[in-house]
Amino acid sequence: MPDTRFDLAIVGAGMVGVCLALDAVDAGLRTVLIDQQPPGQGASAAAMGHLVVLDSDAEEMALCSLGLRRWREYGDLKRAQWQNAGTLWIAVDDAEQAPLLARQQAFAALGLHSEWLDPQSLAEAEPGLREGLAGALRVSGDALIYPPGALLDLLERIPTSLLTLRIGSPAIEIDDHSLTLADGSAISAGQRAICAGLHSTRLLPGLPLLPRKGQLAITDRGQSTVRHALVEAGYVATTQSGVGVACNLQPRPGGQLLIGASREAREDQKINQPLLGQMLSRAIEFYPSLAQMPLIRCWSGIRPSTADGHPFIGRWPRLERTFVAAGHEGLGITTAPATSQLLLQQILDPALPNHARFDPARVLQ
Amino acid sequence: MNAVVELLIDGQPVRAPAGASLLVALEQLGLALTASPGGSPRGAFCAMGVCQECRVRVDGRRGVLACLTEVREGMRVERRP
Image (cartoon, rainbow over all chains, first blue to last red; front, side, top):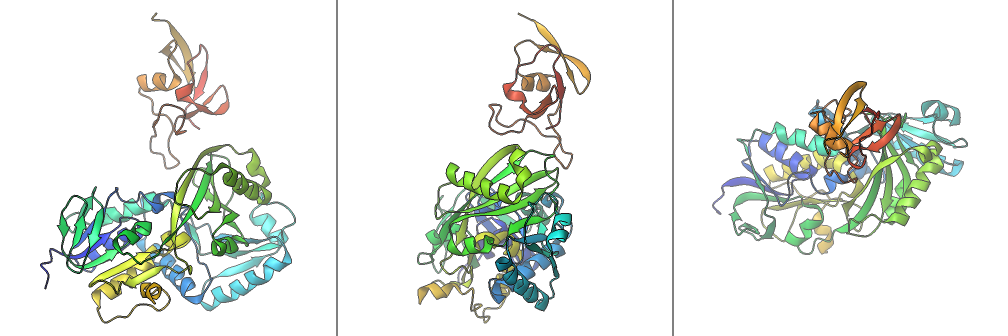
């Protein structure tokens, strides 16, 4: 048996790593959380914070739904700026309406409330949307948060006496016995969980993660009266193709409007101006008065994604006592508490097999 | 040298050194820039026109960057973005 100072070492202090640290400490595990940067500086810092249930398949929907339920159970998070905004999935024509009605059935089967808004109800719900839209599916249970604030709130919930934070030196090597940091120190832990986004591949060669760069812009305060997250129905198609832009508008407290979304297979964080222009034009097509709102900031972030669109969650078969949770693409914030729950169950019960859809071993076959 | 201008900040007359940026004037007076939507005070971060954290209203115009704006006699400043 290895000499174990910790029961669990978590590599990556993003939303997934922090949710897992909270759950692990609650379960009584002596836990160390390791990152090169201070908590929440990677993809979590750039994310929109749309807690959203997607329905590409039953497993994804269940993971999102569990994530949202657990987010609600966290209760009051001061800096999360929680808004029960709901999502409007907007159809531009009748062809886009049919899949949304199918989505409504899928949500109902899971006990999630959604309703179809005809063009008139849609105009009443969001008067700033352009005329001539076919309608929208309103998903009431979706919410909006400010991820960096939420992450720090969750981290503060963990008593400092029960969690060791190792910030500043990245984990560079892992074998069956030990985890080595760049400063040369070795971390000995009963179990290891790699939640380091794209960097996970450095520790786990053979685990392919793909960068899906996204760009966001935000308006000045006092500009917007948007109440829901406004997402065009065609958004899901861009998530599947991995490139392009789609209208995705989200209100922030103080009347700011957060504007997305774009996708590129790139890893640099430089703003791609032509693509930003396309993204804003697309948003203005849906919300014309946006053209008059001053923008104060643009930024980018890298979504870690996978070739088949499903995250890696579970045991990594090439190493002993090692788990991975990475590649959630645009659903990392929504599903972080759910991912944490799945992983912790396995960490506590060595007999529990990997979830078939999220099994990281699928890339080794 | 030692010239001063008088301006109005949130309706209060104050004096500031001529040639100073509005940001420097506000900081000399110990005034926070803008409250966050949650009410907590904010301050300038970059002081060179990039971060947009020092947005104020000047003579009714929104989105003026205090760090890039020189104080002027009679200027009316509102500490909100």
